[in-house]
Length: 170
Image 1 (cartoon, helix red, strand yellow):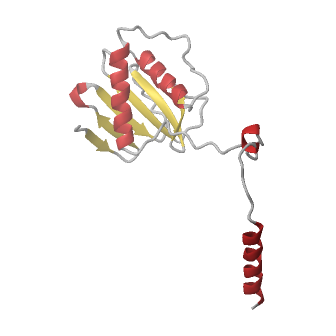
Image 2 (cartoon, rainbow, N blue to C red):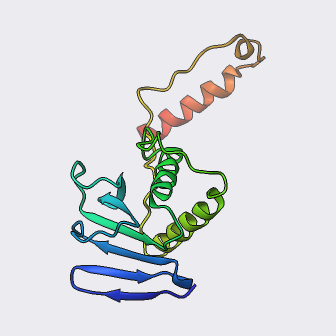
């Protein structure tokens, strides 16, 4: 895939192939936001908000300006649903928005294109951290374990301990 990239002091602009739109990556929210765009807010490289301007503390903003035939509300909903599926968000903030089934393949294809481009640039928006186990693991003695036959060779065990103590003495 070939992209046209324009890097400025305070933002990076990426023109998508086949006039599908563009991606603008900035450190601050752009004041002249297009009506046909979706905003992804990032904090330390992780997604913290979709279409949220004021209530999220973000250090990087990705604005996706889609072509005229793509509804931004549907695209925002698909990004939010994808974040919920990946465990980044706990709940879908656009629960009231319904995507028509005729639009779903187009929106999914565009979302996948955006995710591919952002992954190529090093943005892992939906990477989840490995959960650490809580507390000590619990081991149980079961009847199945108690029925396993075993034998202890006391002579071999005694020689082992004698050999080790002899090595320690000398």
